[in-house]
Image 1 (spheres, rainbow, N blue to C red):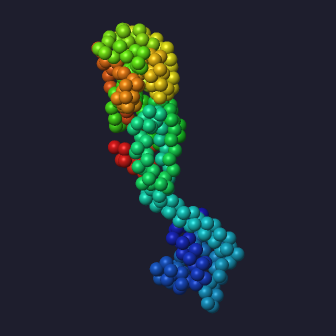
Image 2: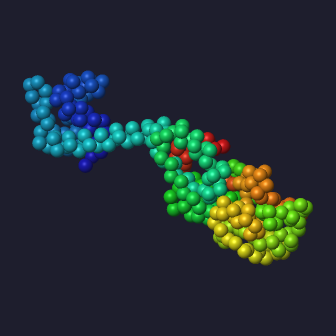
Image 3: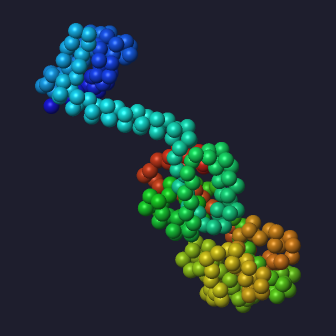
Length: 293
């Protein structure tokens, strides 16, 4: 079948609805001969008569009525699609799909999420919690559009943009308060029961690499997935917990926790926004990043 001009279908639809060539032309803001020409061309390509010409207008034939049902549905879908794009463009619908660890959500994203949610209340927010490796996996699987991870990440499929610097530290409760009175060596630190994130997390790997670089093998007493739980165990005197300093500022001020000063300081870590190299960000995701930055 020859290629049919999409505008012919539009003219056919309006003519069928109006039942009159002149009225259809007026509604479409074109001339009546243009309507007649389009209908004629469509009938020739289809090889069937679509309208019966009456004294006061036109009426669909059996074949024309069959075509009308499909044309009407098609233009209805196109109209819905245009409205959908308009709503996405104006952020009156859509989804924000992000992933991050619990601490990053609480201390870096939550206030921005609150502001974004208040500003664009019709945007559905989908949030997945996980460590850096899990967030990268979710990105590749298409479960999220943007992830917030600890840098560096060496993956050709992932693009990472720096947004924030983390300052980590070891903290203890009152039971080990005497160790916080003066700088201590890494060796002395390793003699204290260590409370660390579970193996496989980027935070755990970071601590292990830092200790290994100084010639020490890590020996962990308590492994947990939650920074909040590590902090709680440190407060109760179980040992030294490795956490982000911004997470425990209040506990430090109130004297529930004490930061260990190390002769060999722990390097700072960077947090980045991770996206897939091969996929463009949605308008919603781009807007959220603008809010955050």
